[in-house]
Length: 131
Length: 278
Image 1 (cartoon, rainbow over the protein chains, first blue to last red):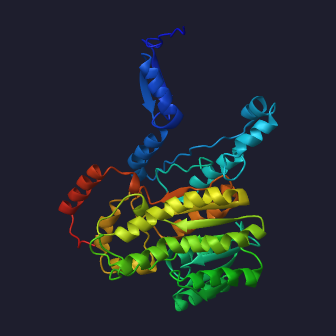
Image 2 (cartoon, each protein chain N blue to C red; image 1 turned 90 degrees about the horizontal axis):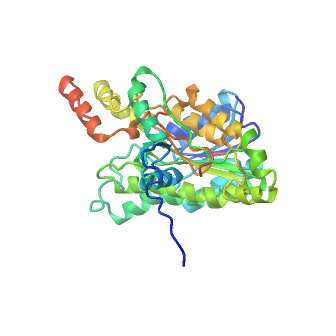
Image 3 (cartoon, helix red, strand yellow; image 1 turned 90 degrees about the vertical axis):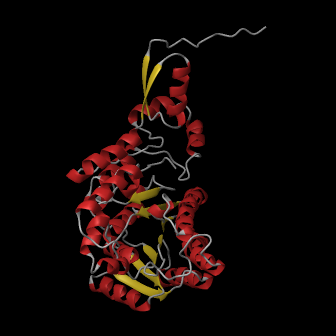
C-alpha cells in the first residue's frame, strides 16, 4: 500500500516572488507554490521591459531585454559540466548552433542594443540562444 | 567596422529602401554584394553608389516570383566570387496599392494570392534551397529574412501581406533548426513603418499627416532604412553568433502597445490638430 503525503499547506503564510513567471519553468513554479499555500507575485521581465519602454521612450531612454539560453560561465561550467563532458555534448545538441553560450555572446548583444545602430529598437526581448 | 571582409552577400530588392541601405552597409563593412532586383535602374544606381564609396558590388535582374531568377542570382554570386556567406531576403514591391494581392480573403483573386505569396514566402524557400548548399561549402553563413510587424499584428484588408509576413517568421524559425548544425544562422527582422524612397512619396505633401502617424511610435519617429540595415548587419556578424531563429523587432516600440490606450491618445491628437489622414 502506497501512502501519500499532503503538501497542500507546505508554504502557507509564505510569500514567493517568481521572476519570468508567466511562461515555462517560472510559470510551473509559480503554480506549484500557489497550490501549496504560498502567496505568489509573478514578475515578468519581458512585460516590465515593454511597459518601461513605453513610459521612458519619450525621454529618449531605450529599454530592451535579453532572454538567455544556457550560458557557460566560470561559476556554472566547472561544477555542472566538467565532470561529465559527454553529458555536456548531449546538452549542446538542443541548440541549432550546437553549442551553449558564453558571456561574450550576451555582452555583444547588450553592446549592440546600447549602440546607435539599435536606436529604433524599443521594448524588444532579443533572444540570445533561446532558439 | 569591417565585420564582413572577404564575405559575399546577396541582397534581394537591394536597389532601394531597406535592401538598398543594407547592400550599402554590408559593402561598407567589406562584403562583396550582389544586388538582386527587378528594377535595373535602381540596382545599377546603387551599385555605382557602392563603388563610388570604394565598395564592391554587381547587380542581376531578379524577379523573386520566378524560380529561375532566384537560382540565377545565387549561381551568379557563387561564380563571380567563389563563395556565398550572406543572403538578405528582402524583395517585395511596396509602392503598389493597386496590386492584386491587397484586400481581404473575399477580395483577393487567386492569382493575386499566388503572386503575392510567391514573393513573400516561396522566394525565401527557394533562396535557401540554392543558397544553403553554397554556404555549406565555406562552412557556414547567415540568412536574414525580412518579416514585418505585419507578421505579428494584423491589419485589415491585407490577407496576403499579413499571412506572408507571419509565415516568414515561422519559416525563419524552422530553417534555423535545419541549418544551424551546418553553421548557418537564420534570423528575421520585423520592421515597423520605414520611410523608404517608395513609401516616402505618400508623405511628400503631407508633413502633418506624417506627424500624426508618428504619434503611434514611442520613439517619436518612423524608421529609416539605415535602422534596418544596422540590425541586419548585427545579425550577420560574429557578435550575433549565438542568435538564430529570432525575429528581431525594429519598430520604435510600435508593437508593444495596448491598442486601447494608443487609440485614445491618437483620438486626442486628432481632435487637437489639423492634418490630412494618410
